Image 1 (tube, rainbow, N blue to C red):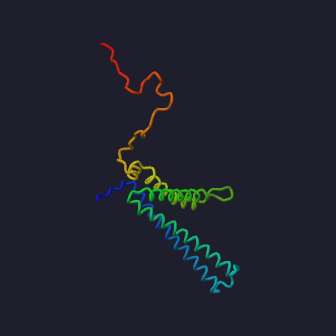
Image 2: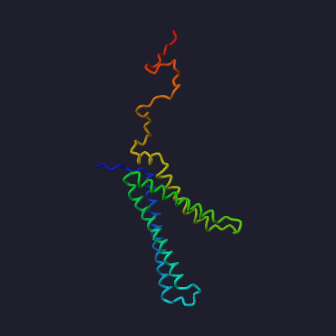
Amino acid sequence: MHRQTLPGAVTVGRVLLIVESSVLMLGGLLAAGFGALIIATAWSGANSTSIVPPQAAADGGAVVIGLGMGLLGVAGAGLWSGIAMGSLTRGPRQTGIAFASVGALVGLGVSVSGFGPATAFSSGPLVLGLAILVPNVVIIWAIGLDERAQAAFWGLPAGGYPVSASGGYWPPMGYPPPSVSMAEPPSVETPPA
């Protein structure tokens, strides 16, 4: 069985998607672990001087665990998309584009959050936002906009898209004018020299 070679843009998109999903999965694991630590500390009595009641701290820890599990789920979908994209099917490609689009929006939101009338300009959110935004824009370009990648996913030759009218196509009413017959091509007469 002959395996189709992947265009370079698809490989770049896959690698970035897998790396980003792996980092997101690590973040989800850390968030879930931190939530479990909050719950354990709340019920052990170690923070008896805290102004937060143990039940409220445990509820907060449960929310953090839930966010961590959500991040793990999204990261799992991103990993699946990046790995399955090697088969050049449309489902993983669409999932990867959706994943990268949400990531680009998050990156844009984080980078814009550094600007505002109430706060002085801070480069921290800008740098973090750009670190999130740029790889996601590259992923969108690589698997969504590159011509060779599109041709590979649609199973077309890399030269372009075949253009042909569907069966039953006929020009709209009034075209060609009634005086021109569509049955025969018009004859071209060359003037005598």
